[in-house]
Image 1 (tube, rainbow, N blue to C red):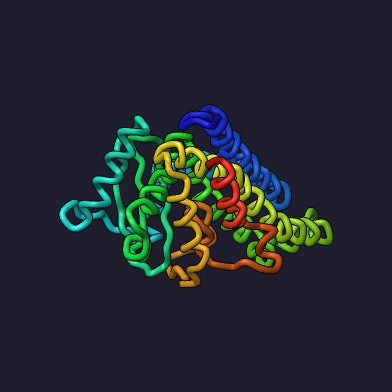
Image 2: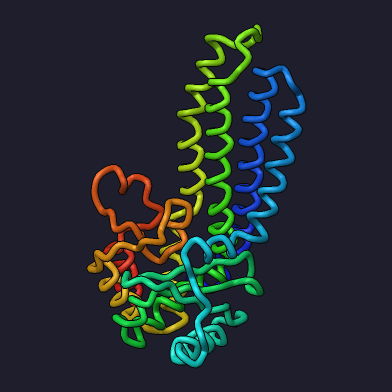
Length: 292
C-alpha cells in the first residue's frame, strides 16, 4: 500500500536528473552558439547561465510560483478553520505544517510548492474555501500534503523556472540568426537548418520537461491523501465539484499549471489532452472509490 513516503527517494532522484537534463540542453545551445560564431566564450556563458538558473530554481522556485499565482499569506484569524485543518493533517502526516496562502479566484483549485518540508507552502483559492464542505477541504489539503511528504514538490517547483529558461535561451539564439555575421564561413545553409531545428526543439524540450512531472504522482497523492483522512469520498467529492467548475483561473500560466490540483485551464478536448500533466479527473475519482 502506498504510504506518505513511498516515492520520496525516487522523486529526489528525478529532480536531480531534471536539473542535469536542463544543464545539458543549455550547454548544447551554448556549443551551437560557439561553433556558429566561432567564439568559445559563448559556451562558457551558457554553462554559467545553466548553473546559476538551476540553483535559483532550486532555492527560489517556490517564491516564483507563489508570486506568479498572486498568492497572499492566509491570516490565521480570518482563515482559522483552514489553518486548523492543515495543522491537524500535518500532525497526522508527520510533517511540519506548511505555510498557508490564499489565491483570490472563484475557481476551485489548490497547489503545493517548496523544495522541502521546511520551505513548503500550500495555496488554496477562495472559490475552494467557499464551495467545499469540511470533509472535501480536508481531502484536498491532504492531497497537497501528500505531494510535500512524497517530495513531489521538489520536482514540480524546479519545472517552473527551467521550462521558461530553456525557451528564453532558444528564443535568443533564433533571434540572433537575423543579426549574424554573414561573412562568417560557418554561416549559411547549415546555420538556417540549425535554426529551424532549434525552433522545433525548444517547445519539444519544454514539453518533455513539463511532462517529467508524471501523471502518476497525482494518483499517488490522491491515494496518500485518502490514507491521511481515512475518507476517500471526501477528496472524490471535491474532485467532482472541481470537474464541474468551468471558471477560469486568471493567474494560471503554462509554467505553473502542473502545480495545481487540477488543470487550471479547464481544457478537456482536442490535442490539449495529449500534453496534460494531470490525469482525467474521472479516472482519479474511479481510483479513489475503488480503493475505498
